Image (cartoon, rainbow, N blue to C red; front, side, top):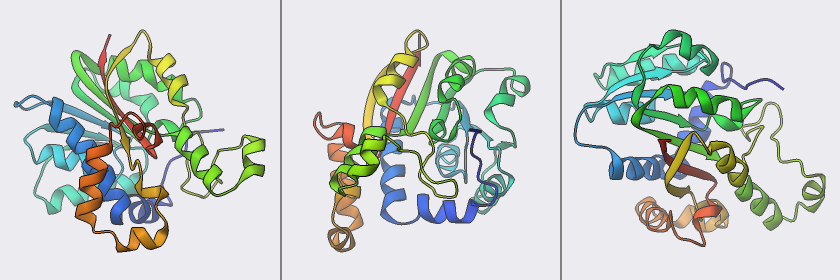
Length: 249
C-alpha cells in the first residue's frame, strides 16, 4: 500500500469534502477549536496536506504567516487561486510529507495535519516528523478519520458481513479513506511526542441523521448544535473525524 494523493480527484474532492453542510461543519469545528487556543499575535503556520487551502486561508486572513505543503499539483493550484482571489499571500510547496524536513529549516508555531493520516500507508511514521516541524512551545492541530464512527455507521446500516471481515478500508477510487484510525491506537503512538490538550468530534450527529432530516435542517442550526456537542462525553467519540490539539512533550 502506498500513500494516496489527489492528482486526478481534486475537483471531486472539493465538491465532496467541502461542499454543503459536511464541509461547513468540519471547518466550523476546526476553527472554533483553534480560536480557543491561538494567541493574539501572528504565528508561523505550516499546513501539511493543505488541499485547497480552506484552513490556511482562514488563518492568513487573521494575520498569520502560512506555508502550504501539498503533494498534488491540482490541489495546490486550487489553493493558489483561492488565495489570489482573497488577495492573501502564502508560501506554496508541492511535496509529500516525507520531503518536508529536507526543505524546511525552522520549526513552526502551529502545524496543521488535517485528514492526512488516513491516506498514508504507515500513518504512525509521520508523527516524529510533525514533532520536529513544531516549536517546543507550539501546537499541532491533528484531525483524522475516526474508525469508531465508521464502525458505528456500518452497524447502523446492517453491514454485518463487512463487520465480520473487519475491512474498513475504502475502495481504491472512492473518497473513503484507506486507513481509518483507531483513536486508542493513535493515542498510544502519540505518547512520548505529544500531549493531547483538547479533543473534539467533527460531525458528531449530522452523518447519522436520516437524509430527509438532513435536507430539512437549517445550516445555522446544524452548526450551532455540532459546536455545542463536539466535546460531549457521550457524543464526541462518534464524530466522523476527530480533532485533537496537541502540545509537544
